[in-house]
Length: 328
Image (cartoon, rainbow, N blue to C red; front, side):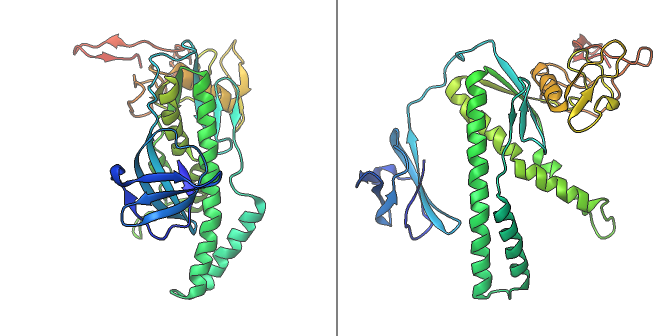
């Protein structure tokens, strides 16, 4: 729970025996916090359980108090729709696309806010370090970024709730977002290549909130009994969801997928096709090297030299050392 109030300092509170909450009216309440005493806050939603702790924080020039409560909710042993599953493909054009053909996306910053933020950046570059105007500019920029962050969090929470409410199994790509959004500038002795293009891609990845959506899905799944599985993303965008043929030329453009295998010709939106591959790979093999959902290995061309095709979904076979490996 996050509620706003005119608080004076950043104080994490964990001693619940010293926390008391009283309702002052329809919109306002007050809480007694250690070392702060009674503090008024705007009552934004019901507490919904016994208070365990409280945290006071400051964001975008405003103060918030958050209560950790015990709602006594228990994760269901089984989802209400036990035989349902969905795969989710996260992208930079559309935040999330499901194997059912649902597209989830929204703009987190308005056109006017983008123009104003750009002007504030220019003003910040001209301001003197340590000056009062510089701090005012930073506060104005933080206000805009705070709105963007709140919209992204609201989008991820609502999207996750819709997805887990309809599916007992949710399959995501095991993406290393931190590594994928790392800078390509390199060093002085070994400068990077295509740094500007990589910077644009990094911003797009971070703007869509890939990791935040994953956290939201994991959190919402606790209330519905859904199971969240992460699989190796290798070749999910190049594999045909109908026949399993893998080729780079299958992906004609960002949005168009058309299978080039003889006798197939399957065509649909590229993100939907990738989401179907992700759903099918939930707990199964994705790449040509026998990777399970949590494993990774070097990419290899999975197509056969003789036929140019690969089985739709290979099964592991015993190895000579007592382990298991997939057909490569």
